[in-house]
Structures are given as structure tokens and as C-alpha cells.
Figure 1 (cartoon, rainbow, N blue to C red):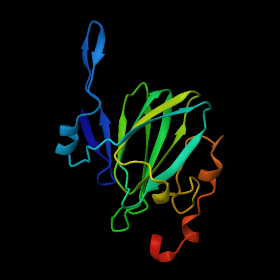
Figure 2: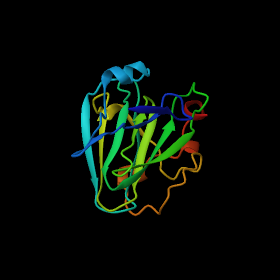
Figure 3: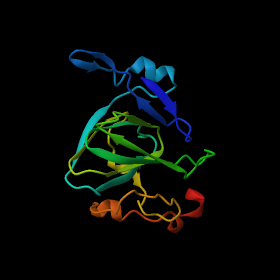
Figure 4: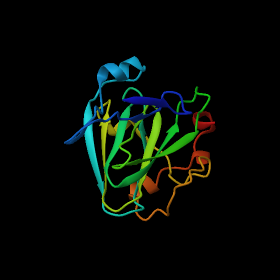
Length: 183
């Protein structure tokens, strides 16, 4: 695997290294030792699968706070998505900054999402299917979220949002929250 750190410290794009032969190829997509060698949390508590019927569907932006902070390793296994993460670590020099990366069945990339990063994605194709390994159990009382269209974040989604859950559309805007929590 090839680990490329993004502009947000601790977040990595992970590319596979194909070992081809006459049958196709073999590639490792996860190795606890390699993750630990890069300083990444190697724990996998849950594996999730998400299927999206329609292009434009948006899921997110979600994260969990202590003591249930999650890491995620996200990979698109059918179709394509635009995956976005936002640094929610108040002490970080990149606090509230975000990056977006296209993950697809074709490019076979994965995105490692550190603890205290909000995560969401938009399906770029009909039938986009996403698998992600999560480093902590889902704990509803510690879940938080951001609005995908929050002007403070200024995320430029590649296509119009066609579908979103009522819960994801209802997260509070950052400027409406307590100044001490987000500024």
C-alpha cells in the first residue's frame, strides 16, 4: 500500500499496490502493522456497507466525540463518490478546513479518516457502494454532525444534492453554535 498524507495532518489517501498475474491482480487493502507504522489507529471495531441508488445522494457529515471518537477507512467498491472530511480538532492548525477526494471502484483508493474529523460523501454515480472500517463502535449519544451546505465550511460538492436524510439536512449551522465550541 502507498500512504499519502493529505494537507490535513493524520488524514491519508491510501492506494493499493497491484501484484498482477495472468488471472488479474492481488492487492492488500489493510494491514494493521503498516497502519501502525504510519502512526494510524489500526483497530477495526465495525465494518459498514452503504449502497446509494441515485447519483447526487449525500450522506454526512458525521463524527463522534470522546470517549467514542471514530477513525474510518473508506473505500468505494462500485461506482464513484466524492468523499469529504473536515478537521474538527479545536487545537489543530487546520481546524474547520476540509479536503475532498474522489474514490471509485476504478481508482481503488481509500481514505483514512482520523478521530475528530467529520466525514461525508456524495454519490457521483447511480449504484455507488461504499465499504468502511470503523475504529470505534457507533455510539448515538456521542454522534455529532455538520451541515453539508454550511457556508462557514464552503464545501464545493461536484453535483447538485438530489437526496439527503432529514437528520443530515437538520444539523445546526456552525455560526449558530456557541462561539467557544467552534471559533
